[in-house]
Length: 80
Image (cartoon, rainbow, N blue to C red; front, side):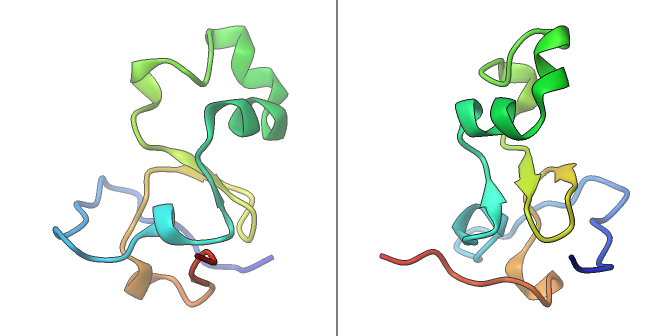
């Protein structure tokens, strides 16, 4: 795991910039988020609109909104 901390404030990803959503370590599929964080279902569902684009980083173990790839030393593009 990395010691990298996601930003504490909401970060806007520039249009066309790579972000966590394109990283192999970022889980953003709702069913996979629920499997990674089983207690999230007590609040409803990972399929809800409240979750937005947030996901789980497998490197940091944190649930957060996507940030720009250049802000993360562990970014590794998804294959394909």
